[in-house]
Image 1 (cartoon, helix red, strand yellow):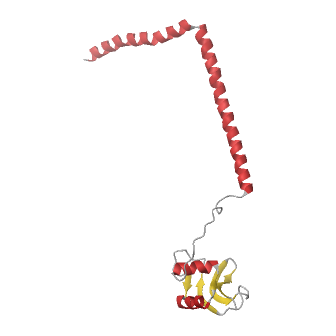
Image 2 (cartoon, one colour; image 1 turned 135 degrees about the vertical axis):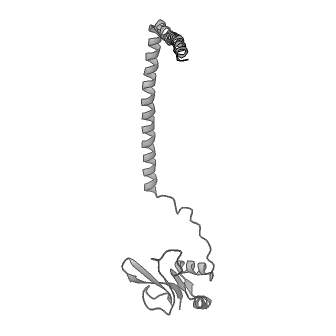
Image 3 (cartoon, one colour; image 1 turned 45 degrees about the vertical axis):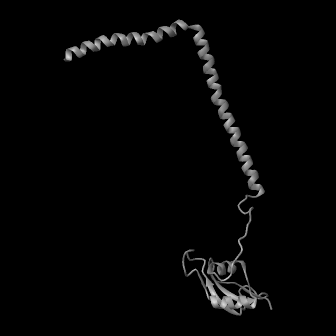
Length: 170
């Protein structure tokens, strides 16, 4: 007879509670079992000591007789230090599926198009401004030089006035 150490579900709807049982491998999940060796309550926090309760002596006994633990129970036994579990490597676990990859490519293409359009829109006014500035520079170079000299003359005129104000204040 193939003996398995596995979980047997109990509890209410959406409120699971499991017994860690030793059962015949052919028996139904929640059916008849040989012995209950612990409990598992997934509703409790992961750091809670009450989350997994396990009778280590009975678990060792059943493992020595040849019972095979399920994956989840194997994890519990590894955490308890009873049975070592080899780490698994699944490099594709976090990789998105084909449809998600296609959606991401489409989104990236749309984003790239929008960035190109924004660059073109930003470059077009800059080019127009450059053309307008060149045309203005060709039409009135004398006006620009006069405009540049005017603030310097005003600053020179204000300086003596400021000096006179300062002399009066003293």
